[in-house]
Length: 500
Image (tube, rainbow, N blue to C red; front, side, top):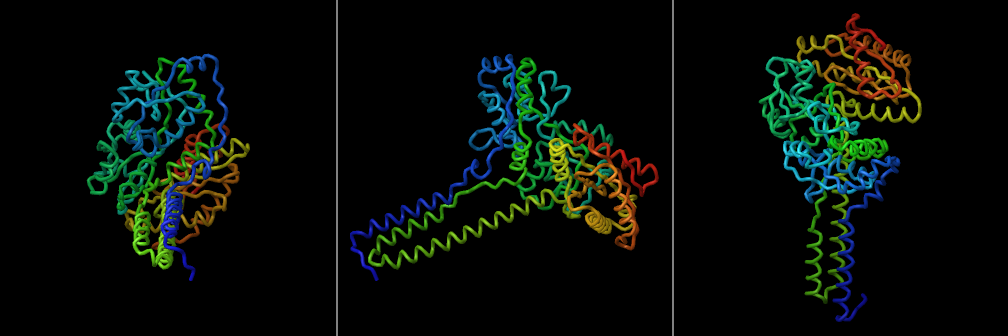
């Protein structure tokens, strides 16, 4: 055994403690965002002379942020602009080479009042409407968010149930979607609530059939508030088209922001979306390890003549604790991966859900614009599905949907994206495929479904609508055309394929 003079023991222990403290601090410091997730290069913005002169004279631009609409718009604990729009506005400020300051508001009503009174120059994230156009100009939407329906796990949602007898749905008071819902579903019964948490609690407690709200915000609220009995069980053919709004008495501000919105690179937009749609796990520093090191150091000083054995023991504790931390970190990563899978997968059929389909179609449009290729969409619906539920019950209906989805996956190609659009309706995205190719695949699926024996020895058929993406179309336009072809297949006798 090596022996060291007693006068060197405090120096050795102090050095050990300093090294360990540095290691602790390094372990608690998150990696630099720029190192782990570099921001893609954005397009250059071309402002005209009038716009440059206006921005130079304007000074700081006052923005209004909805403080309670995470993960899309909000203010963090430090009082800074956060959420998806916060990342976008960092890029807008850089592109426009101008400073932006927040005008404080407590809620959405105060925000709209401030916008009308010109207390703020810009609203960061808002839907356009005729009433709002009286005092605001709107850019091209920079984020689209489908309407989702949340119900309890023991209830099945189909679009027909929106106007079913006794089926009530909660919505946030003043939501712009209310007007769209009542226009499309005249007999729908809507109960207005103060916020989405109140609406979800009413669904959980059985007071209403479901809650209707923005898809990403709904998923965030479910996961953040541990509402395990609820699930996103469907989505509607409507969406929020979120734009930047500027005061309309200063039109140069609106044209400058429109150019900034257009200059955001598609990859950068996808990176921001992925960042905020995924579950945000708040990092909490655990000081237990530091306390343990302090205690060990004090004990070593008190019993210095046993320093060799104490150092060995402390070293074992450190390794054990670090191993436990690694295990905990791995478990968190696995849980996050599982949550992401759940967010994009239909819980019943295990194919992709409406949210993932919307995301895949948007990405395919970006790819098509770059490559010049096209893609096709096949939309299909089980014929007379309601009879199955009415005759055999919802349990058999669920089994039919699961088998139906399995047949579609077997019949599709590896590159195709198969998902449940809502209820008994499914959608297949076919990259690099024109209308004729989609028609051939749809006929193959139609034949496979006809040959399949479903639960209770049932034979089923399906109606198919096929279309092809056309240059410069939006996702809504190409989906609507496939939907029209599907309805034409139903009107022409069902169990057939129609091309738009």
